[in-house]
Image 1 (cartoon, rainbow, N blue to C red):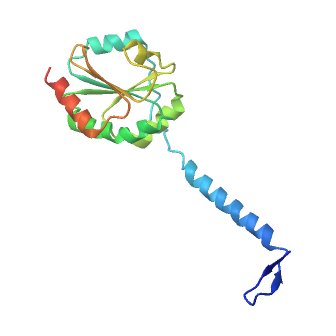
Image 2: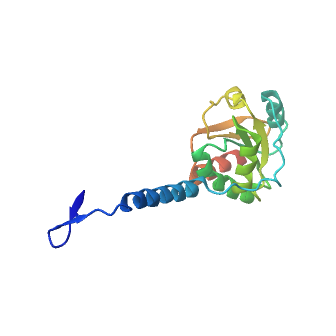
Image 3: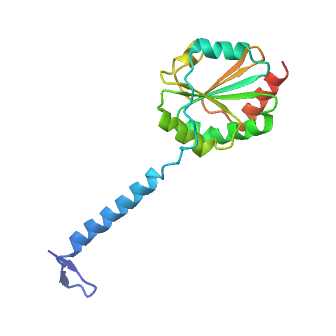
Length: 180
């Protein structure tokens, strides 16, 4: 097969052009996929999350002397990744007067620990583990993530926020539970 050259004539296609194109495309694809995968986060310093039952969490909430923000998340949840920095900052700001709990659901320990190492390395959150995702349903929520429950001291549910939370809403809800 030939293609026109600048002078209008035909120039034969070089036999090595097509394999080189495939090689170049393959290298680009490999580079792109490598970038998408990202590097694995070292979570060796993050302890396994303690498993909890709905009854155990109910008891924890009922015995709380401070307001509680309970964020339900999973490592595979993209929206959870976007709101994680907000919870880390809120725990740093309000951690002396509000208890922050991250409830990991329908996940494995490796994914949960990696997420914590990446997003909550120095955050003042307590972490619990619910492999089935049944606890949020028992608390009045759903199996969807993310969810955020706001509790007054003693475990009274004040607000349930479904979906990604923004900084303003998080601050307003924290103010609400601090006022109770």
